[in-house]
Length: 398
Image 1: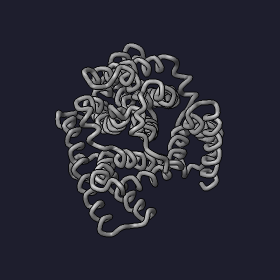
Image 2: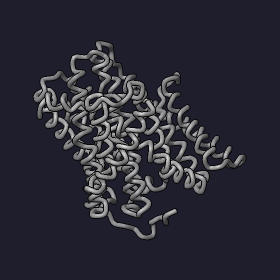
Image 3: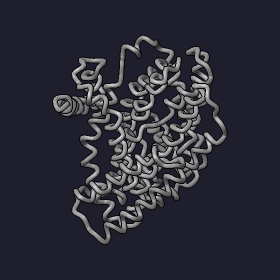
């Protein structure tokens, strides 16, 4: 496994550098590295590493959501108001509705199977969006109307809704009953996640005030707390969103001790460098391009059609907001990338031997290949062209 890790890091760094020289996002090179080294390419990665891939991807997601919380000032979201709440669920629901309309006639699937596919496709990728929004905040782009903060919060929270809907759809496809209580788990999971994260964040903030810890020790303590909160999702007697709790810890630390949160944020930014490489390379390793080519262009039509519905959902969420027209267009573009959630749950229907399993996996792969590089490029390219730069908000380099 050590040789596999070395290959991933060395080839991934080289490929990311080449991609940036070609004016493409570095993650394009990382994805390509995973495709070439993975089981559907040259098959040079150890089975043990591939077996650990879901856990490693989750660790990377925990790191990026911790960074979200440490940089997300709730006062910024309050200034945005109603659109900040709508962006957390309306675009995802619009995309699911689009897939429900398009998949049955184009792919010949049932409504239940289309619901499963829509839930897999509807989650936007925090791992693509969040690092770019943090950079925009640092550079002062769009900060007057809190555009990066709005997108960070929405990209992180819509995953909770999508994963619960996916679980309900899989339950329905398996023949079990889905009750109103199944969907009632969504607000309950959100509420419990916020309360659990707030309690943990308050306790950590008090601990750090009383027992100041060196940088590395503090990061390890914060990271361990995030791991425990994520694991609690499987153990808690009530629905509990571990990832939302992780983000809430950072928010509470920022409100209680901004200076400490800023130091932690800088350290987590360094930790994100290897985590990002592992995340996207291992996502790339799940991509079977032969399966994509075999299923034909109809899948791409459904994926792109669903994205049009998502764009309409973003547009509706931002109506009568304080955002300028250019900022709304940027939000539509920035809300397109897919990656982590699709890689994490795309193969679940196949593992459950559902008839739509191979098709759903192919749709997840197509969504990653089409939207992760293109969405990342769109954010990087259009941010300085569509967002105004507020020089007063620009943060100095450390």
